[in-house]
Length: 329
Image (cartoon, rainbow, N blue to C red; front, top):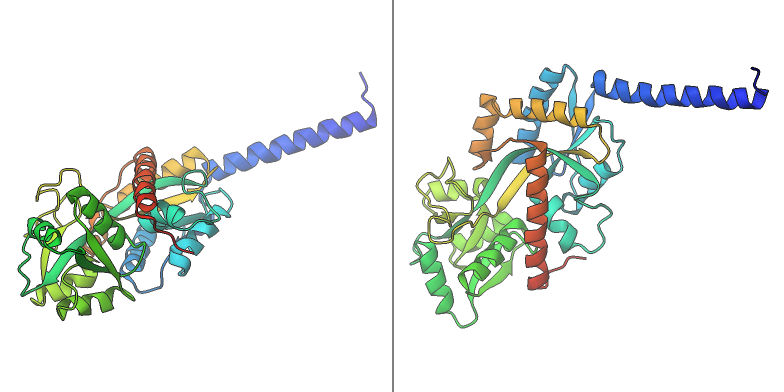
């Protein structure tokens, strides 16, 4: 049976299209990766997260036998890097090292972000969790979270607490604890972590929530006293400092997690391959040592577990941000 020329042309085009589509899918899954991968980091070069990112990139690159090139994309609270991932092809060749801030806090804090943390990404693997540490001046009478509660209740306008700025993980952790304890903490936003620490060391502000690496030197030198850490487990670099959970607040866990994500639509077997090499990288001694030096805890796990963590934290932080009336333009 003969077909009209036009019909034959349509059939041929359909066959070619199918071949291209299925051929591309097979290549992206079976031959992945066949060229270099970009790892977007929402921060400047040289920081703690950047160092961890480069160690992870090198280790994953060795496993995949392809270069994993770190690209630093600071700015807008890390939103620039995450938004770039959302606009990237879902082929596994662009990954982001995302954090709590960009994926669980900023979507509620900023009213007009161009990405959706749940719909636009596939979480691959959680890398680590870095808690905050509650610090006070060394001559302070505050030695526990119970003392924090007592001091706050005895201060008419609420106990002053400083953090690196409005909407930071430190700020929201302070808000979360205040609500958990039924106290008032008056937020004193600073121009960054270092200026906030100076104010606490000088006794101008009685309390601060800080990332552990930023405050660690001052704690070790005796210029600050560490009262608690905000994670489920004690920090390896502050083994004698109890968690907030240990001090009477079951389930309290608020810190900065970070992990690898790819664009929504990335083939499942590519996600699985990245998850496998990501978990393997977390067993490397150099990565464990660096994460712990940053006050963090190595995590790992499945893509599904990371997805659930992302959903739960979005619900937790969005509820708190709404109740506290916080927003950033």
